Image (tube, rainbow, N blue to C red):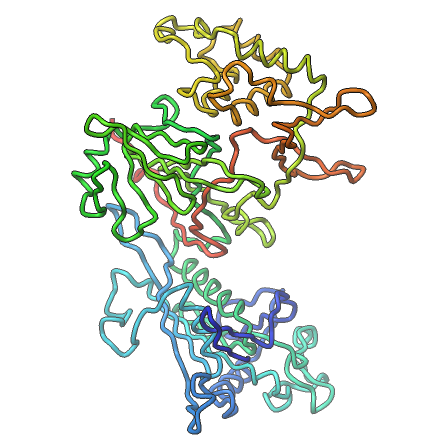
Length: 553
C-alpha cells in the first residue's frame, strides 16, 4: 500500500481493490461444521498460518508517518472495536456489543483508520474501563481477533503441512488443500482469509490481503456470528436513510397551516426555549451561534425570489432581509426553506423540506439489491426535457377556464366551504396548494372529482407551469408571456416563456422491449428528497416479543 498526504487529509492506495470473493473464504476444522461453499483448512495448517502471520517482513512494519525520516519506526498497530450486536429495547434491556481486536503491521495502519471511521474506537484495551469482561450487562460474551497478514500468500502448501494429492481426502482435493508440486503456493498465491471459531464465541481470522473491504466485511461476519450465538438478534445485510420530504415552492412562498404540519409554536416561543442557540437580531429573527448560515425566522415569513427578500411583521412594522442562496431559513415548526438549483442546474427556485423525516429501512438485501442506493439522491435518474403543448391556443383557453373557475362548493362537507376560495394565481396560494386543489380527493364532492378527472394531464401540467412562473405584475395578461415557434407555417409544440424554452423534469423508470427508454413526468413541485444515511451494509436488529409492543388502552 502507498500512503500520501494530500490537501483533504490522507490518501491510502492499496495494491488490491477487489470485490470478488471466489476462493477467498477458508475455515479451520475443529469448530462448527464448515459450509460446503467454504474451504476446509486442517487445524495444524491454521496453526502454521497463525505463526507466520505474526512474523511479517520488516518492511511491512514501517509506519508511513516516519517513512521520510532518517530513523524509521517499524511497529505493530492495533484497534479495539465494540460493534453493536443487539440494539437496546427501551424499558426491557440494554444494548449488547461484542469485542473485536485488530492487529496489523505498521504499513497497514490505513486499514485500521478505515475501520475506525466506520465503527469508532473502543479505546485502550489495557484499561479496565474498556475491558468487555467487566461489562457483563453490555457484552454478548463473544470476542474476535483479526490479524492482517498479506505476506501469507507467499507461503507454500507443503511448508504449511498440507498433504500431497495421493494422501488427501476428497474434500481436500476439491478445496485445493493438497499439492502436486512442492513449490505450489497456498491458495495458488491469491488473497484469502481464514477463520477459526467455536461455540464459546471466540473467533480468530487471518486476512492475507490489504483490501479495505475485507476488513469491514470481517467485522460484519463476526457481528453475525455473535448475533447467531446470542439469539433473538440478527445482523442484516441492509441499508436505510431518513428521508425528509422536499418540495419546489416556486418563486414565492408563505406557509399554509393546512399543508404544512404545525407544532403550535411561534417565533417568540422558539426564542424562549432555544434563545441560547441563536443571536437575536433587532429585525425579529435569529442567527445560529454555531452555523451562521442558519437563520430562524418568524412563522409569518414570506419568501420572494423575485424581490430577493424574506419579510415578516415585527413590532408593528414590516421587516425584510436578503434572500441568499448560502443561507438556510428555519420556521418555528421546523420547516426548512432555501434556494436551490433546479434539476439540471438551469435556474433557481425556492425549496422546502419537512421538519420530520421518515426512516426508510431496506432489510435483508442481496448484494446489488440497492442497500446504499436508498440513501442516494434520485436526481441521477432524472432528465430534463421540453414542456409540450398539443394545440397552443386551445390549450391556453383550457388553462384560462381553469384559472377563472370558482372553487367554492367543491367539498362534500358544507362547513369546509365557510371561507372564500383563494384564486389559483393569488399570492396566498402556493404551488403545492394548486396541485392539491386539482387532484381528486375523498373530501371533494362527486361532481368536482369527475370534473378534475376530465382535465387532460398535459393541461394540468400547463396550469402548474403557469403557477410556478407567474408574477403578480402580470395580472390577467399572463398569456402574452407564453408562446410557441412557428414551424413550417404552423404553430409548434414546444412551450416558451418570454422567448425562453421551458424545461420539465422526467424520471427514468426503465426500458421498453424494443430498447427505447421509458420516462415519466414528475410533479411540477417535485425536488429530490433530503436524506441522511442511517445504515449501509451492516445493520444490527433484535426480535422483540409481541407483549413488548402492546399499547395500553
